[in-house]
Image 1 (cartoon, rainbow, N blue to C red):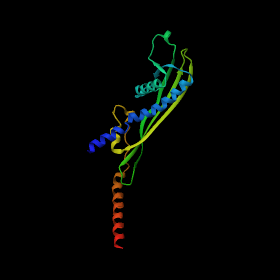
Image 2 (image 1 turned 90 degrees about the vertical axis):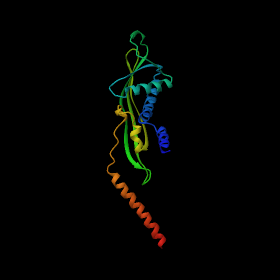
Image 3 (image 1 turned 120 degrees about the vertical axis):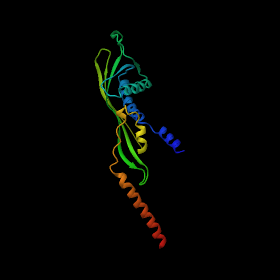
Image 4 (image 1 turned 135 degrees about the vertical axis):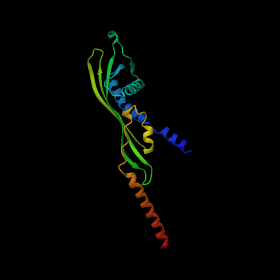
Length: 197
């Protein structure tokens, strides 16, 4: 029964990749608005740089632009056919990091904050090779997950940009049982001392 509940909870909680996609969609929506303001209807996307998540950026950006009515074309080698704009994207940051560690109650399960950040640098070049505009867009998505689920949600170790190491627990694992024991002992003492009166 516990295994079934854990599976359901993990299925409802976004993985690190899904959280990063939320941030990337926010950044891509901002780029879509910029393209629409320049009346761009057809564009070729080129992802620059060596970011390991470049494929993920291209896939998500393509999806967002298509949903907003902008057609995407693949690379065309014949320059005579190049009557479209060219959008060059450089992922400056696509990462999932961990923030504060907390508990919902004094003796509740340990939880950790996840922050997905995306920053894209874009250059729009027209069919004549002139730079139309440059822009930087940002997106952030955050949530809080159970500490015990964090390593499962991080995904493949091949995607280091999505699988940052969990922060160390700064010794609280020794203090917490002592604090909890002290609180419980105090409550028991108060309960029996009030009954004695």
